[in-house]
Amino acid sequence: MSEEKQKELGKILWAIADELRGAMNADDFRDYMLSFLFLRYLSDNYEEAVKKELGSDYPTVDESEKRTPLEIWYEQNEQDVEFFEDMMRKKVHYVIKPNFLWNSIAELARTQSSELHRTLEDAFKYIENESFSTAFDGLFSEINLNSEKLGKNYTQRNEKLCKIITKIAEGIAEFSNDSDVLGDAYEYLIGQFAAGGGKKAGEFYTPQKVSTILSRIVSLDSQDPTMGKKRKLNSVFDFACGSGSLLLNVRKQMGKDGIGKIYGQEKNITTYNLARMNMLLHGVKDNEFEIFHGDSLKNEWELLAEENPAKKMHFDAIVANPPFSLRWEPNDELSKDFRFKNYGLAPKSAADFAFLLHGFHFLDKEGTMAIILPHGVLFRGGAEAKIRKKLLEDGHIDTIIGLPPKLFFSTGIPVCILVLKKCKKSDDVLFINASEHFEKGKRQNHLTDDNIDKIVDTYQHRKEEERYSRKVSLEEIEKNEFNLNISRYVSTVEPEEIIELKEVHSDLDKINEDIEKFTKEHNRYLKELGIEGLR
Image 1 (cartoon, rainbow, N blue to C red):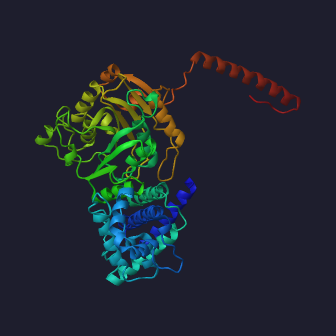
Image 2: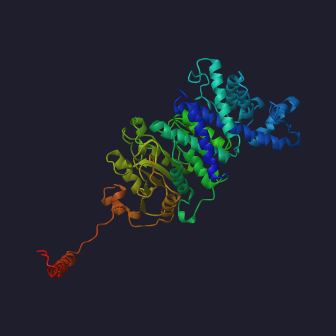
Image 3: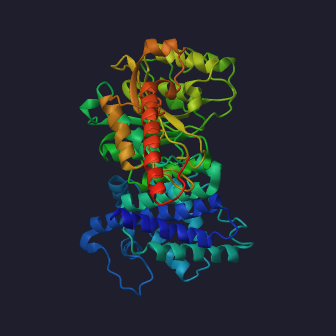
């Protein structure tokens, strides 16, 4: 399906959301909308696999039939259901009961059935606990089907759900169920809800164009990016993964078979569930990803608790867009933490470097980390200056990229991308000042494909270009007291034109001579006409 069709689907779904949410705020309605889209994808994908597996045994139904083909098959083959479901779990990694499929749910909604509400509750519980080999506990925990925002009583809530699901079913009926198509529509809706939800909603969403820069960078060979993209990444990690868009963008760059396993961590329960749905909706199987609900700064994930360097978890690529300058509570115990003890603790006023050091600790020696941070990390003093100095002296900061302002929903300030490596080939730091290379928008600015290509190409080939990029030695950075403010090294200011005073003076003399000459000539003509001339 073309990009135009994908955008069209996204706009149709957003229009439905805008029309139906009523008294709900955007964040509340988002959870319903995205969950129903998710159910539709799971259902259609499963039915396609079933149809292929059963072949000629797959029942044919006409338009008057209110039941799905799978429901009819279950009734006709009751003794084989358990064996069939075991087989489907091996093939597509999940099972959905016939009465929980999207088409069955949509039919209940279309006929205004009073059973829709109860069926939805049962369907969500089944998908969370029984559909997959891996249990997805609480996947729909943020969807309150008994919310008074849907209605004051069961009947009103059921009617509202019927209306919402019927509208969605009609809106997406003509569109493909391909994971890329629905996945892009899902991402579009997340972006629209983030744009409408202000700073709070925008925290979990990284614009796709910005994600693409990070993804393309970590996909390249770490030691020699000019060699191009790595053949495979065994693992990729985002410790503040939000809805998972950054991780999925890396997968898109590498191809579906280009990543061994995806790992993510998210503190916010709503976006944690969004991330898990997003993975499945994009065709990532349940054994190909692991998303953990917990606080990265406290390192609550047992998987990452191993202190022994020989046994600890390593990732080939790390991408992140953590909350900017988050206040946190560093303490004596954390100062001894294996992630921070060699660098010191970030100040309580801004956890930016705490996030960075958390991720960097788990980076493989042949890996690349790309993280989005506010510009303050480049020049702030105190504890941050000490951390910055240590990272530079150890040769871990590879590239610093300054981005334009107003690219994010959550903030209008310009941000930067830091590229870090455990073992980097070059002994300098590449500065890229891309702050003036963007397409201006009304509410937000945008990066064009050309803008992105220029940034990645400059990083990949370590190019230098006046007023855009420059390789800076550690000696020069040290002279600047390890201040990494981009404008110190790559200024975008156009140099003032040098004025030669002698030439200017000569030009003025010539002008004055011409004025005197033409004034006399002008007066001569006036005199011939009997008119008094100029003095």
